Image (cartoon, rainbow, N blue to C red; front, side):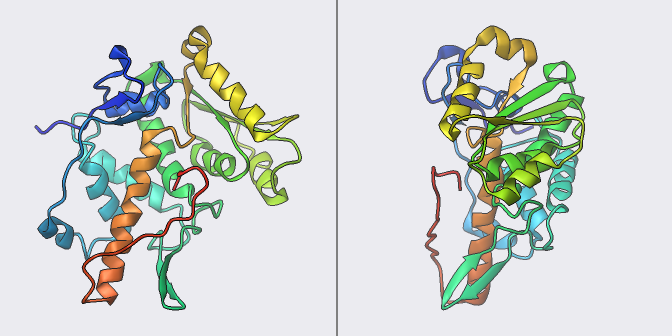
Amino acid sequence: MSKSTTYSSTRGCPTQQSISFRDAVMRGLAHDRGLFVPDSFPTVTPEELESWRSLSYADLAANVIGKFVKDDQVPRDVLEGIVKRSCAAFRSEEVTPLVKVDGHYVLELFHGPTFAFKDVALQMLGNFFEYFLATGSNSGRLAVLGATSGDTGSAAIYGLRGKKGVDCIILFPKGRVSEIQERQMTTVQDGNIHCVAVEGTFDDCQDIVKASFGNVEFRDRVKLGAVNSINWCRVLAQTTYYFWSYLRVTDKEKDVEKVNFSVPTGNFGD
């Protein structure tokens, strides 16, 4: 059986090296407060890439994620189920449709439940959390603590609402998010969702989150997990739409071999 990719902290702590996919997802942030990054990167041959051309978005995502996640972490049939359930939350069957605007191809990332690109990753992360908790991680409990300036909070809430074993606590700066984002966050009635308006800025919210993760006794006692872009699962889930958009562009432009991506981003979360 081939082995899944392992992950190590960017800060190099010896106890945070060669961590499994399951543990990297459940921890979110490494215990030395570094980020988990892959110890190695799988490859995709040109022939393999071409064989993916006719796949649906969900099937393509299962193949891309399956390069990193093997049966020793998530059985293939379970992985495919997680991906398909995640994609079913989108209004478009293509999940992230590609359209042409004024001669440029534009990838639409707003077809998820909260209209944010982060839905692509957070729908999937919620389903991975639920699976890992149901199969022995964290004694079946996880407290997700996140800070948001608007879109992360909404997407996290809609990805985690109703998930067994998960409590989701989102901090947002009072009066500093858009009205629609505040309503998206504060009107979800699932019992595992908790929104807290903080007097201050987004940085104040983030400081609370970082301090909570830095308190080892508290972190371990309440079984803290993260949904911000520090969680590797989010990066992995979003990787699919680069493969998807490349294949869709080269479907239409037969003479094109290389595709350049222009990515609007604030803190490289996309």
